[in-house]
Image (tube, rainbow, N blue to C red):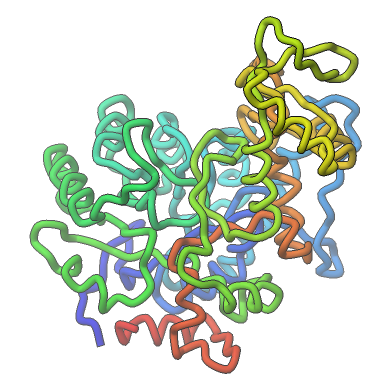
Length: 458
């Protein structure tokens, strides 16, 4: 057994193990409440969470609005209803034990409104807000208004310092802790800065030490750093536990918590997760958010990566031209042979990108891209794929066909979609499902069994 002390989080003493929030609908009230009932910290995703009808069936999120703004309002209302529903389920499942946190992306469309309306509609259900994917300067103010704790997700000491100095210092009494999410190990969206090389990981210990020094400098000695990304066996993190240079610390389990009987996708995802090998999770810059993200290398991701290579620079004048929706565009002649080969291979349709290039796709791919862009519902505050911007209506840039509709893909993968055709976010240790003897013979543990196992150190 790993020896560690209970850790005060969101006002009570809990086991220092935390469920990582996974949207859309992967971490829900069932998983969160069960995790909390075991004396830990459960987290449900409030990113387009599911709500159910009187029969207990999930209500499909369909959109009837004719404009993007109308569909954006529908999306916000779905998110609020789902968040409230999952918060109440989590409270019931927890039996008053542990803590219940909700996870949001700061860059999701309508984030501040959704947060406030869920907290208003699910009073006394939520104890903490976990928030990443952006710089959530208003997070502390919202948490303080509803008297809940907040946990910013950062990947560097520098990011936390900027957040604290600008806004958190005014409401530090509700700051519950800081989640350090390693950008080279975690699943989902990753906090790599422009100065960091995605191909050159840095030892997380050094970055956590730097974060603790910054926190202590602000008088935050008692607040935990929650280690996220790459956590599988606690026995591998013993030098972080009760370490005077780092403590107090807690540990977040994201990917490993997918395979539990309470998780709605566990059975469907198991074959894919159990087949993964080291390196099968890819860190790429393909997300329409503009952030790097880590996902399973399936057919969808492979097609997107291949698409990046079928593009040519647009030039002012040349004898190599292509028609882009009726407009003649001149291309770099250095790639003349490649362009001709792509067309012969079945990729005759050219689409403009915001990088002053064109990419070559099949007619079917072009129709699907345009369909998805036209049906944008504003799931992000600003989207590179559709050029939606919630504040201005449009980013003013060309929609980027090299990206994808993340709302559509995550909704599909969470509700029975083909595992090769949609995005599967996962941390870089997902290959360990295949190697860990705990999962032999396709065993899927309950959350209680998983936590019991985690507390042994393995």
